[in-house]
Image (tube, rainbow, N blue to C red):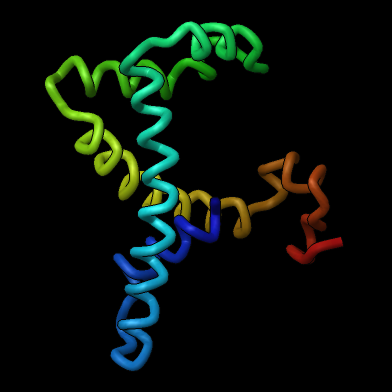
Length: 129
């Protein structure tokens, strides 16, 4: 997932090499469309408020407020009159832009993110263990 959003972010913000433009554009388009289909399924599930979605939400770990944040965001966008595709394409560029920035923050200051160390990175060297 990170790689998809990193490629999309690179295409949007860092595409300055004319020789690689077409290759980067094709990769970003193909991968982003695949993820958008998955996001659309999630948005449709929230829109339909299916029984399955309610059951699955009961088993989400962590704070309930945080676990339901995405569903509430989607519901509010849909209540505002947006269609499923409009909601999907509002989420996708935001996720792409945020993903690269958040990853940069984690890699620059890993000592502030103890989970990074727990998944196998050395805080002082910023390299895989």
